[in-house]
Length: 508
Ligand SMILES: [Zn+2]
Image 1 (cartoon, helix red, strand yellow):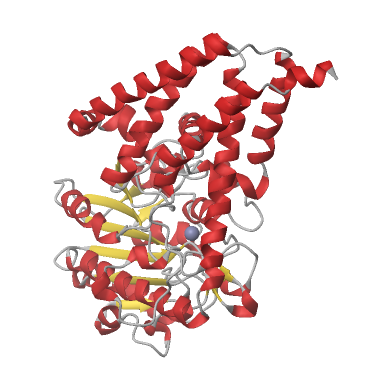
Image 2 (tube, helix red, strand yellow):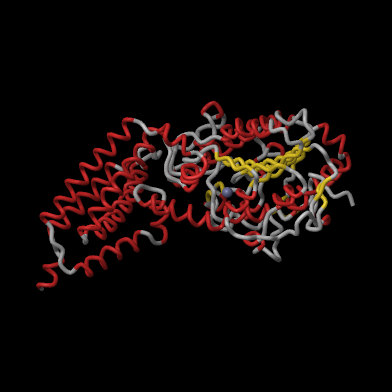
């Protein structure tokens, strides 16, 4: 009995509950305030998610409060960090991501200093004062007996809330986003340091002096929703008008997640050796060997499964470093354009540009400007099931209309050059088939990504046989394994690692 009364320490619990709620309202709320919801049920789900974050915060504060010295150091630091993150969320509409850490630590420390202003200084001072009061109260009024039992309870709460489906919303929200982003960032750094000596040196070469190859990695775009492929809606009016676009409606991808699909697309991975996606270099290295300057321009987060390839490029640019999927304001692919144009202006005569787009990712309405809201009514709630199938498809199709516009802009920059552009989506998307939405479960519609190729007139004049093959092969069925070999062929690169039989522009 005495044991239990020692653990039930009213002042201790009152303080932790107060601090957890304070964190929940002052900080975590900033990650929820602009979540779109449509009805009371949505609101209830969002509140539950918020509750999970607050409970997890309770667990962590509980753990650090047990020892007064640890609390005196960790609590003020955590409060300052959360204060700054909350400021970023409200004022700048960005959240902490591994990309943002990369930008902060490596590429762009100057921008951070520019954003450091008087308001942040006040925030830090306020956080310190608040922390000082809490630490004082903890030292003066609370004694913790049985610290190990308390620690065991606290750790249990942390483990339960960081497990399974509960972890997903938690990992992207203040305060746990600090831990998860740092973890992913460090993990990515280790992967980038991997030695993957896949190709022997000086193996790849080209006879061509001047050529630009662009690879646009699409997102969640399914082939059968393209007007180009006979969809009943005009979702790709600009591309459909361009006679130099060849669409491939029958490409099959085995992987159906971004994380697994991108590495597969870029490497020699195939159904017999899928592990090559995680152990080998990509075709980017062969382009470099052949004298191409390589760029990766990212409008998506860097993920541990493909961060290696992003860093394989000579130049890596993030255009939206602080965007995360829990931010519901605009996150548009037109943001790629300035860096794309600048890279094209680089004097090097041979270039490979990889553009990783946000495309048709959920939450659809974020990924097209309001002026592209052609198909109506659109989705209103971020809870998938609260929207009708019609609304889901309308919003999804609007993203395609916008992708059509953005790709058209990419192409416009290439018209006067010797250039070829590949577009391939990482996977498709479920739009209500058998009640399934988005991409998660293995569903047939996820395996048919949109894929098309555009070429300039100069390219056609230089490689007429390539264009003939593409036109001849356009309706054939291919696995995405074709990309590695085809893009090398398109760039006129000779290497022992290219398997001509897998190239769809091979003129056998
Ligand atoms: Zn994806």
